[in-house]
Length: 202
Ligand code: FNR
Image 1 (cartoon, rainbow, N blue to C red):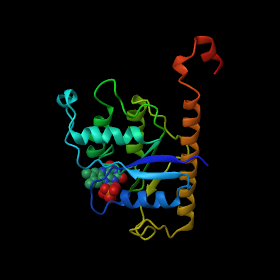
Image 2 (cartoon, rainbow, N blue to C red):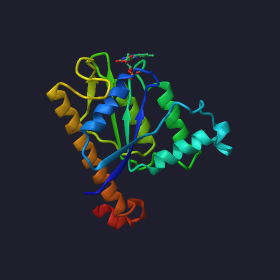
Image 3 (cartoon, protein in one colour):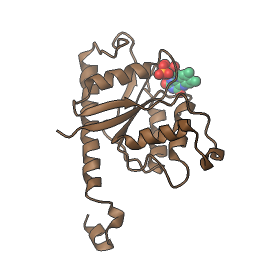
Image 4 (cartoon, protein in one colour):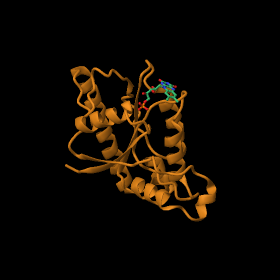
């Protein structure tokens, strides 16, 4: 079975982040062929294009971590109906300097938990437009909007409710299959390299 390196982001800086707990649950429930490494966002300065001429070590390390991953997983809260500032700042770092967008062609999953009923749906919608602009293909289905119930998740990410565990496990299986599909197609070559006739046949 092919192994894939997955870089995951937790979009919250909070000590008791429910999204960090969700990320632990997702890792436990994921298929064995995915190996997870967190790509930390907490030490990045606030991005400005003044840095483009000479990226600081935090920015360079962040881009290198994104580029080393086969696939990306965003596990994030929704703040004020959008992407939390710390995570958006990290994405801005990875997208620059112009011409060196680290997210391009990285198969990506977006999931999140909130204390409210809509389960980060609006954040996920914003994230899809950002990642589309950055040319990162995204898992479209299943969607996963998690209304977090503290009695179901313990601090280590064990999930006591079987239907929730099954749903999250299914999400991760579909995510793994999606990463494999995207990388398989990418390995065949970049469609932009084909002549127009070949492209039309694809
Ligand atoms: C929130 N919360 C929130 N919830 C939601 O469903 N939609 C929203 O737009 C917001 N907005 C929002 C803004 C800010 C600044 C905070 C701090 C919180 C509530 C949020 O779901 C809750 O705090 C979660 O615990 C956040 O996830 P983490 O940070 O614990 O992973």
